[in-house]
Length: 126
Image (tube, rainbow, N blue to C red):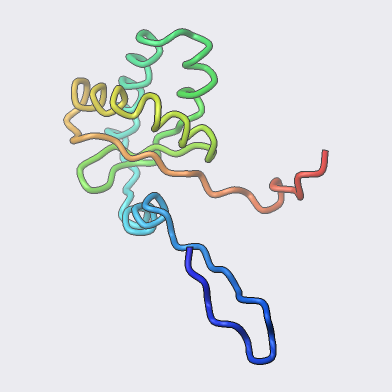
């Protein structure tokens, strides 16, 4: 986190968050993603293997929401909601990478946080 200088006459400093490693990676790779039928078929094979390897409730909740968006930098790319991507990467990132290498010709996988639809984001009030 970076602290910017104070505005003249203000006693409050503005705080600006530094980009996370994920944000840096996504900014670099997302423009390179190319959607291809081969990527879609490859992701379907990986998803099938993950479905077989994990408890159905785990797969349904955490892996099924991930959708193939294409290929970039020699790797399959998928995206999903932020909480799903972060949880899945921490707990199953290694398994996903192994499945991609085992069942496809790709070097691994990148998971991206899906861009939220501003109209569906709401203000959090339930």
